[in-house]
Length: 584
Ligand code: GLA
Image (tube, rainbow, N blue to C red; front, side, top):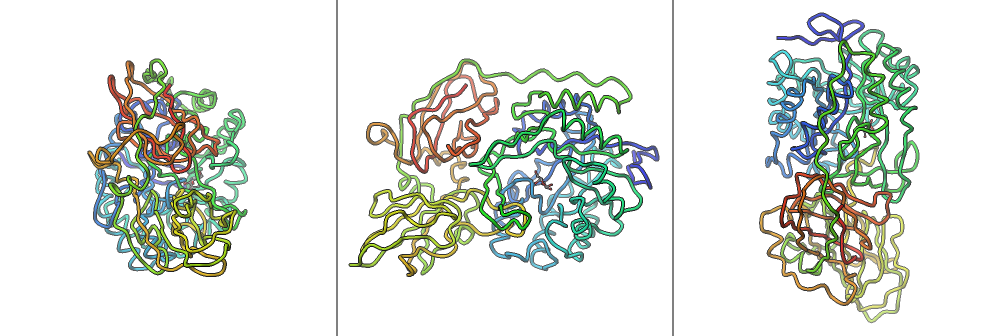
């Protein structure tokens, strides 16, 4: 069996120097039936390795209950079949523009800032999870005939904290779970990050998008020997809702790739194929410059990332330019590209002919209502992704005064006595018109994704302060959660009492449903003209959030989700609906 080690200057395979030409592909962002195709695209680009994170929160929705936690092993087997080595970054924190940086909501909700430290309760949960997860990594290590050659400790810890004891304990835990391949850390090439995130005796690597020579010089100052590796070469970037689409010039990215390789370094292209944040798993940033304490910047559904293999699995210009660079570092000719996936046949316009108001949807799919003096948070209601309806009364008689929400995360559609009164956000949380009492106030609050990076990572969602009438807290709040995964239960949506959409143009929020016929299934995109904000499912598969705020205007529909014959679409609209959607 082969042995992969860290030498003084190079990575060594059975003692011979090897260069890692790796690309990031997160198995949880790609439909499983497409893994083989995407991995073959990575091979064809000239990569010899694939890297993936592991999202703890997706695999452990509540403590001790696991969801498809064998997926990583199946993906590693697919990588092996494709002739790729594998780097695994199991977290527990992964950042990755993923909800809560991969930490479960039930963990951050309870522990707050005690996560990512040596706190015993936190480490107890990590130990349970790693003990469950890591056997499938350990048994697929290169020394046992598998593809796994390296495993990461935490993720860019130096961008977050200084708890060296925590990192040490993670190293010990990985080892005690049977991980024998080399470990590494990855951090920005900055003194404070490398000193905060590195562990003596563990290979340090650097993450950057440009300036390879300077980056590696900084890394060298901290680590005089050992192979150089850029663990995240950001060849593109992600988008935020309501902001401009970010573009990275392919030639400029290819020049940086060349520079990295000319430094004699190994590389992990982040992302080689980005995929999609299906099912509302996208995370969020906080603006405000380097302190990252400013306004919420939720991530869009697409994780195309401007990657060389685009969201549809197609080669882009960046792909061909990268392939030219990577070809210089191969012994033989590069493999051919795999056959392109099937494309959807003729476009279909689907009228949404059935509708149920949000309150009825909540009655069928919602959790139990909590009645508490102050609003319950999403975490207290055990809502990871989804909505909470808050109801509270304004006593009266009293004259009109400003109605606002303190500590709103993230966006609320507000009704006063059943009439829509406005949409509030964390940044603009006062209704335009003052409200008189007595009145009944209802707020539908959506989490736009928990922060995955920076000091506010893990902050709670919902109304985290209170509903205010002028300076007065309105007490006695009824809170009821609607988890997105309630829609996943077989037959659950069929129990919703659908009817014809209200009024003429079907603008009312609610759950819409329709069936449509498909002649030739294949990769497609869904457009939602006139719709505002919500989620779409096709045949029960959650395609993710749509939002007219842009810059994303269509959702990717993986071909394997569609079937020949009759298909079903559901649209959960939270603000103002359109009448039809287009698949093409
Ligand atoms: C950091 C993180 C990644 C990702 C990138 C930005 O490097 O380690 O998980 O968030 O930033 O895409």
